[in-house]
Amino acid sequence: MNRTPAFILLYLMHGIPPFGRKALLLLCASFTSFVQAQVRPAYALFDGKGKKLSEKQMVRLVGEGDVILFGELHNNPIAHWMELVVMRELLAQGPLVIGAEMVEADDQAAVDQYLRGEVDAEGLDTLASLWPNHKTDYAPLLAFAKEKQLPFVATNVPRRYARAVSKGGFEALDTVPLNERSWIAPLPIAFDPGLPGYVKMLTMMGEHGGPNTVKAQALKDATMAHFIAANTKPGARFLHFNGSYHSDFHEAIGWYLKRARPELKQVTIATITQEDMSTLAKEHHGKADIIICVDALMPSSY
Image (cartoon, rainbow, N blue to C red; front, side, top):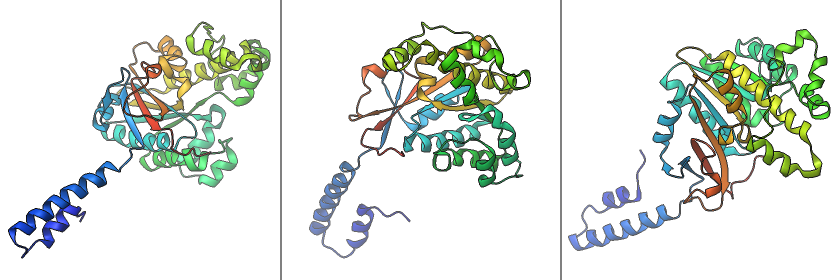
């Protein structure tokens, strides 16, 4: 039983004169208020307009989407924990399909072997090109999908094709063998260099990048949107995990997904960090439908 300080003091008051009981109650109230005041929240939830949300309100909002784009910070432990929370809550509401940027499309066969129990986690690590932080941050998501028998879609483009585009533009994809083109979005890749996110990316890179680097980013966005659109199922929600910059301000993946499947309702989640979590900074307003604001003092996982 979880016994609060107030419960314990009341239990100990048996046989104490009334005036003594009153003093103990006042002491208990003061002590409880002090303890509660010392609890520093690790995160806060906001909607896109900066209004604070409860976890219950967040769960209701994500449940309104056909596709939920969960934008994470790849090294943020709170984001990874919340991903599991959202998975469990959505599954409790109905059928669910999972997808992730963190697994590339040419590794789908290996993922399916793992989900069927034909290989274990170590076997998957051998067969697939997993991210360095897979064991700590993404293996729990795959394990949950396996336990609950959920489809898990590898949505990202194989990195060799993204590297090729970053060097030679979309023209580099013309040399991709026909039997491997099923791992990327259909050619030609639509591209709008004027999308604010791509403009910002190019500006931030300065002399360290160029238009082809942004095109490589667009190839990833287009491919993830393609596999989300191709794997949505009637009556099921699709929960997709990706870097927050792939879905911030309803751009990137969202832009491509809207072109492919405009009837699908998208709900987006973004992860940010702030020192002051009492209010959402103006720069983050509109970034997503739900914003997970993590204490900036939270240590990164790498």
